[in-house]
Image (cartoon, rainbow, N blue to C red):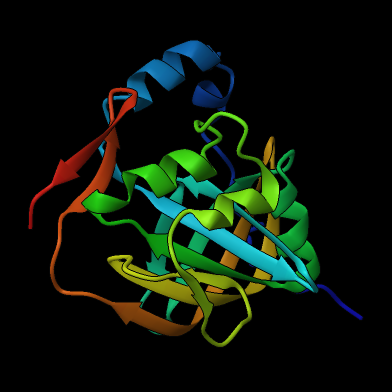
Amino acid sequence: MSQQINQKLDWQPNARLAALPTVSADDHRYGMRHFAVGVTIITARHGDTRAGLTATAVCSVTADPPRLVVFVNKNVVASDIVLNSGALCVNVLAGDQEEVAKAFAGMVKDVHGDERFRFGGWREMVSGAPTLDGALANFDCRVIKVFDESTHHAFLCEVLATCERNDGEALIYLNGGFRRLPQ
């Protein structure tokens, strides 16, 4: 079976720029702290095992077809669950869901693994991945490609179902803390 590669193989990076060193990981992290981003919880289920994590590395790719890219650290349990199930749900958090964000970010003492799902109400849509009730938006997805990007997997996903609410504040992350952004 041949692999389809969606990489522009005839493109070459700028040689002068390619020879330059990158900034340190700490400098990069410090700079990114100033980049206000929406907070999501990425969830997945494989069999009876559920997993999830708080994430800010989610981006719309195209509207037609409806695609997102989701970056998940390879060292978290959820990464393997997504790989094994081929599905995930992106739950875009509302301002009143900060406690849920903290639980899935490992910021609530002695709450690990499936215990995180005690925070918030959960259901399923199409893929079987847990979907958070009351989120500003839910994107229930199938994974169509996986890219190995250093410490993370980049999951290219197609959206199978959505749900949204039209009220409430957005939860964002800026300068190392959660903030609410009014509508």
